[in-house]
Image (cartoon, rainbow, N blue to C red):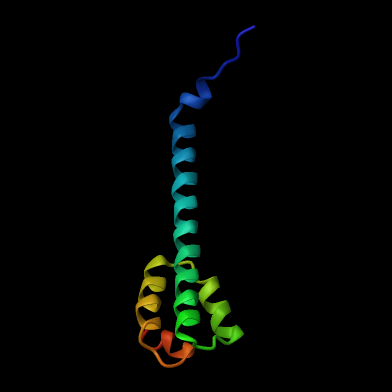
Amino acid sequence: MAVDLSFYKSFIFEEARDQGRDQGRNQGEVRRGAQDILDVFEVRGINVPEAVRERIISCDDPEVLRQWHRRAVVVGVAEDVFVGG
């Protein structure tokens, strides 16, 4: 008895697979970006209030996280990472 596997070769399946892969990459990039910011604060000995930590962790925009990461390197307090955007 042969099993019909044509669905797995279809455009719909390939599109869904690619979308899932892209979504997974984006989620990984976002998690890494948030962790990088928190790591910078830790290495610099900067206290991170829970509200700041939550805002960083809940951000799902990789570009915003990159901007915050750059700021994390130079700010004096964690809250200033959000200043300017």
